[in-house]
Image (cartoon, helix red, strand yellow):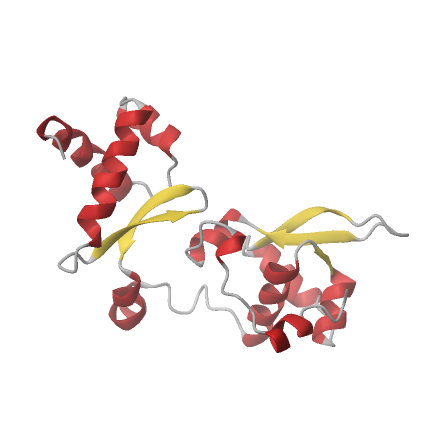
Length: 182
């Protein structure tokens, strides 16, 4: 990295540390008063810097923006119990199952979720809406025009995904299960 960009990289690093939500290049440019080109160069530098094994942090692309946080292997192994929101955000198995169905099958209606799960989804959908992990994304073009649900940016942030395309791939059996209600 060129010497004259070190100060800019430090500024972007500080902004990412202070912001609680992922920031895209445009926001970083606006906040830092740097050009978008300089912001992009500094992000590349920071990605390389944090990629080293001696760093406990990583720069992650999440929900269309950049977030500075602990490396995944450290978060999973050591830090989640101490620093994660232990119980207040924990979802029951039924809620996680419902959320998984929505994530992999979106947009999806309540009836389709219930056909896959085999039980009523009212309480789980209400909980996931309250936690802002899912939202109404439209109405299905069938008689009665039922509401369709999909995941939110908050879902992407919590699960550290840049987009829905980053969800783990399902094997054939799992994939068929998610298609039962279709």
